[in-house]
Amino acid sequence: MATKAAHTLWPDLFMDRVVKAESQVVAGTNYRMDILLYRIINDRVTWKQTVQVFEPLPGSN
Image (cartoon, rainbow, N blue to C red; front, top):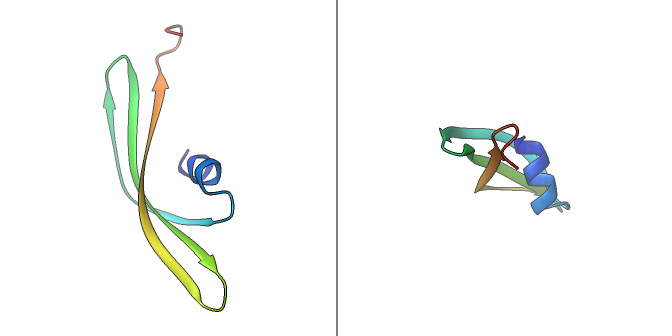
């Protein structure tokens, strides 16, 4: 899920890893993840970004 979100938001970057994740169930599930992204130009540049993904409950569309 984190890789797909990172690629959708930043297609020119690579995801390194999830450093923190939490979820909350409401009318579906909210996933909040702190992920490390990187790009290599001359040196590897890494930074942290927070993404949030909502996944509705089955049949609640």
